[in-house]
Each structure stands twice: as structure tokens, then as C-alpha cells.
Image 1: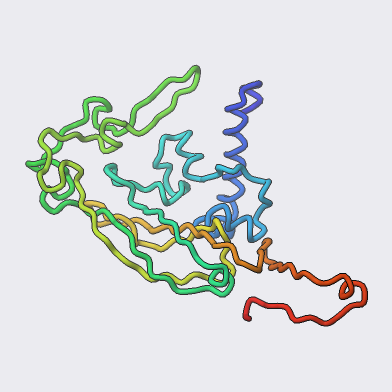
Image 2: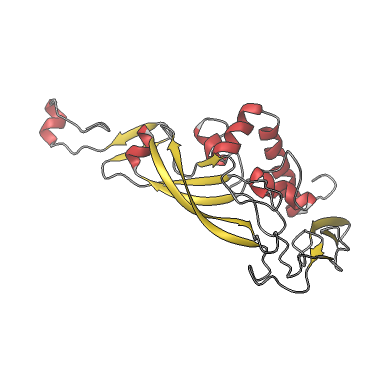
Length: 257
């Protein structure tokens, strides 16, 4: 808390981020929008102004900075991990201005990770793993910074608590193989640049069969004529001086032609 750490800018910033996260977590509607579209979705829907939250606001990052990851149901779903690789996948999708306005159906191609069948995801030649000597199998290590203690994922075993001696020849010790997949998604009407869509259970696969989600970050191409500001669309039409003074009926293009 800033009152206990006066003059500590880092403490003030973390306290601010926690307050921001609480505003989202305590409101079911805001949390649902954040899970599907990210911070940009809240901004465009009036959940808060663009200046109300930090530019790097992310629920998972906020809680991971305090608790070292795996915060539980409150953490961002895109932080789920097998220990060897994250279950969730993030990709970018570039769409045309009109597609953002009227919606569209898109087929996405991406690469997923699945457990190696040779070693059953262990990464070990004989399928055996050993307790990580650095974290003693806990998957977490503690660090002392001043008067504060932080717990973080063990970098030596990637949080699994296990290590291997002989690498699997099928996957080189990674424990997974890559596979190309495709999925059709419906882009909703009115989606905006910077929003994020979540496609459930289309992410990476764990050794237990659990599957992560696919997160699609939307990038909207600029239009030659129209400019969007929040939910309004603008167009600039040049006119002659006489038309402006005397008035005249003119024909202007619309989004539908």
C-alpha cells in the first residue's frame, strides 16, 4: 500500500493496477467483456475511458507480479500453461474496415502444440522424469527483494518441478509436436481495432488432454474514405466555396455504397 511505502513509485503503480483489476473482477459484465475482447472491448463499450486504465493493464500480469503465476480463477485465462508451453494461443487477424462494421466470417490457420506420442509428453527418452533440484519439485522458487518476498515460476524446470536426463528423439526433449489447424470464426458487427476475441478450446493440448483457448487480436485496416471514432463514422467531403455559401444538395458515399 502507498501509505506504507511512501515515495516508492513501484508500489504506487502496483496499487493502482490492483484497483483497476478489482473494478473489472467485481463487475460480471465487465469481466465477460474483458475475457472476450480485452481492455479495448471495455473502452469501446463505455466500461471506462481510455485514460482511466493503464496502457499495460492485464489481469493475469497484475496477479502474476504478486503471486508468481497460476493465480487461479481470477487470473487471465491466457496464462494457463502445461509447464512446457502455454495452453492458450494468441494470433493477429487483419480485417477490412467494412468487415469490422458489418461483421464477417473468417477462416484462420494457425499452429498448435500437442504432446509427443513417443514420450507421452515427458520429453524424456525413457519416459521418466526427475525432481528438479533447484525448486525441489515445487515448481516455484522464492526471491527476497528488500522486505518483500516474491514467488515465481522455477526457470530451470518451467514450473513443472521435474527435469529429464536423456532427451526423447521424437521431440528433442520438448515434449510436444506442432500441428497446423484451421477454424472458422464469426467477426461480430462493430468490432474495433485492438479488440480481442476468444475462441474456446482451440488452443494447445496438454498431456492430460486439456485444451487452451485461441485469442484473436483484431487489426482493422484504414479505409480510403471513412474514419471511425468510437461508434461513429466520419467522412470528409470537399466542396466549392459557392456551394458552402449558397448551399447545395450533393451526393455522398455511404458504407453500403
